[in-house]
Amino acid sequence: MRIDHNHPETAHKSLRESGIQQCGDGTSIATLGGRPLLPNTGVPLDLNWVQDVRVNTSAVERRAQSQVARRTVKKEWQAAWLLRAISCMDLTTLSGDDTDERVRRLCAKGRQPVQQELVQKLGIEELKVKVAAICVYHVFVETALHALEGSGVRVAAVSTGFPAGLSPLPERVAEIRRSVEAGAHEIDVVITRAHVFGGRWQALYDEVAAFKQACGPAHMKVILATGDLLTLRNVARASVVAMMAGADFIKTSTGKEAINATLPVGLVMTRAIREYAQQTGMAVGFKAAGGIRTAKQSTDWLAMMKEELGESWMRSELFRFGASGLLGDIERQLEHYVTGRYSAEYRHPIA
Picture 1 (cartoon, one colour):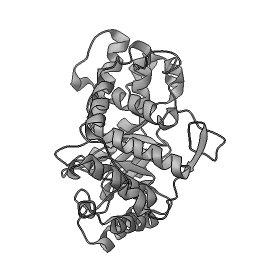
Picture 2 (cartoon, one colour; picture 1 turned 45 degrees about the vertical axis):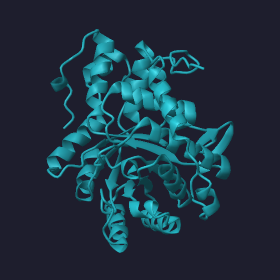
Picture 3 (spheres, rainbow, N blue to C red; picture 1 turned 30 degrees about the vertical axis):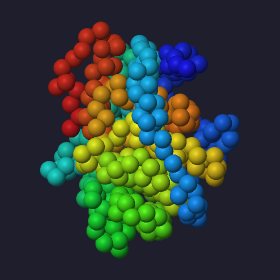
Picture 4 (cartoon, rainbow, N blue to C red; picture 1 turned 90 degrees about the vertical axis):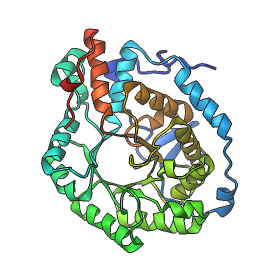
């Protein structure tokens, strides 16, 4: 059955309603099927659950193809969904030539991601739209914190030997602690892919649990590097183990693999999140990262979250885009909505 994302009951009714909606009574962070869900604290490793995981690859691929073939959101609903995408964005710079000045420029863009002229034409001044977080290497955490002070935008640091995750475990744990001590609000960690290939689920569980303990109050996003995991079943099993070990988010990719975020992988991971929520009563977030560069892709991912997990997951608390080039195209689409014309890319610089 097709779902009409333009219908008032299934999409935002106006731009003014595109702000983040809070869930529940303050203790739950999401609902699924009317059931309130708590933040994830992890559960003991259940090897039977992991071994029982199965994925029908052809069915997942057909479902992903139908996702992008459906009628997309249009007009004011599209603009509202694009604003929602901005509010769920981890604006990212993870290049070898990063500098303090580049990070400060990125933070300025994160504080005001849409040009003021467009904000006024859209009539959304009161929404105070901003990105969810700025994601940087550890060495730039302090720079980002100073640049974002008072904005409410969070600072995320990649850690644990990013992107390969092959440094010794004590060094990876110490790296997390250094970023948390520096003030990072969120830590993006990478797993040892060899644990997945070898079916060493206890080793993977223990590794992620050690990372979680080192994160302390910081939210932990566990990067599975799905492009390296070869099969969707591996993706599903790694997702389940990471959630059992206490992941606050599970994340597709580092952005450095040959294949990064794809909708089939997203479907497998979100359905693992749904099953975990049904079994434990706890909600885990999802982050799609790598290769998401167009406004149309962002609405495809938002639609998937809505259909697979519900509106509770269409908020920055439980859904993120890891992006560096996406924001520019979203701004161009918003300008087209306002003016009827597409602007040149150079009019929407990010850093």
